[in-house]
Length: 406
Image (cartoon, rainbow, N blue to C red; front, side, top):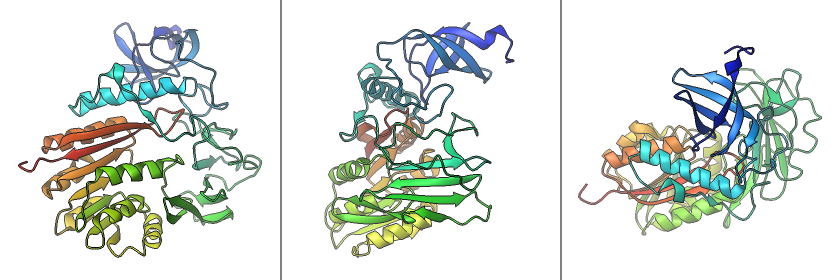
């Protein structure tokens, strides 16, 4: 599509939300995925991608707006701005309904499981922070001139304004004016003591050392009465209220008894391992596994007083293949791509009767649910959380139970 072809812009009416933040429209029988639009809107859309069977487009003018459309809550996001808050123009309650509908659709299509009717589904809010100021960790990338910024959507180009609405006041103050090593990553953490940590890491193979330029390399994070010191470059839940919420949910859903064995897979710094350790007691056993050396070091330090917890730095696949006995409960929090067939096959072969599976991408989560169901697992509980307000991202948590005769 060249810039002077009249078909580069279309007037479209959107129908339903799609996974990934777009809405579905149709033109001459072809599906068009339109970003920056809401269901039921008529928009002028600029075509940005031809995938053969479908097109991608950006809504550049709203001709007939949805009643759920509001002034954008993020000053830097939008079709010509940063890709940080791709649903900042929608009422937060409407965003939760959209996310619930998307998850219900993906579960039905890819998982063969009917959770709820799409019209009745909605994600639940996390904590009482609201839609803005909820993020505790953010990564900025730097351009060739050393200026930090956020990427435009699916682009290497950066937007150098840093006042994203996800960030609490003061989190990135002064960082836009500084010059950083080119093509580096600037990790910023506002920890649970209210201290800011700024760590610069070079691209892989650059030879640049990872350096704390403000605060420390490790940030203080707390869940309940336990404290972690987690590298600024390692994984920690982005929403400030998510770790406590998920830990409480796992404690409630694990149904552990003293002496049982539990696995915490893709365990990061071991937050869920701490919750599981309380359930199995001193006579039980918890294994937490993650590939990140930094996260594993944080887990070993934070859980050093728990003799019933073992920390392993390895892939989940290798760790499962090496286990001599099954667990009574397994908790999985895989990356966005999901756990996948090989890992789920290993869990089923090990005979793990109860699994708590967390997923941060609706399609991957739905596919994983479908794989469990093919092994005879039933969905006992399923919750969907708006853990990433202003964005299309969502967190899903399911309990999969295998009947005793399966």
